[in-house]
Amino acid sequence: MTKIRSYKKLVNDIINLQIPFRTEIIGYLKYKEIYPFLSIKRILQTSTKTVVITGGQHGDEIWAIHTLLKWLQQVDLTKFPNLNFAIYPVINPTGYEFGCRDNIKRQDTNNAANFIKNSKVQELALLYEDIPTNINLMLDVHGDSRKKFVYLYEHKSDNLESIAQKTMLENNAWMPYLKQKTLDGYKLKNGVLNTPKEDVGIEGAVEKLSVDYTITLELPGIYDGQKRVEGGINIINSLLYNFLEVK
Image (tube, rainbow, N blue to C red):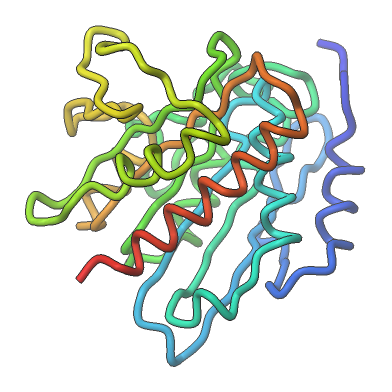
């Protein structure tokens, strides 16, 4: 396989970001080369809820990573005083470097079956050990290279309202959501898919921790780059605002 971009440069860029979070290396992936695995956190004793954000599960969706990093640089944390954050910006470093969906060993880094203690998938073993156990919202940032419009997956506790549909409606004028009625055989309402809870992605595994909301953001691959980034930032902020309003 041939490298098409530098993960080392990306790590240096992330470490040097001027952001109101703490960036640290939580472990190393050991392939032919060594890849540091990053977390970005804001933990306050006074915060009452925890948000986990993941990105870069699929190495061929790099615009999802770039959107998340732009959000990190622009976010105003004074608007989220009651939230702790644990952010993992690049779950799949070798996928990023080689431009492949899975990792360099062709293992799926977005598979609930692999998200276990001492997983044979190195990336998920590290994530499993570090991820908080008291998660209220998990947001998984992806990109669908086939789509011209944004959409969300949402799983939530039965007694809670949808924050995903509200978010899609609020942002439609800036980044239009997918208007079709079904996607991959599932109903799509206001740009939001409600797939069965036996979700194969790692957010499906995290959901077993009694998370209030697990949401996957699918940013369009076929779209103007700058507008996509700005639209993605607005959607992330809207999701957080709407989450905070839930009683």
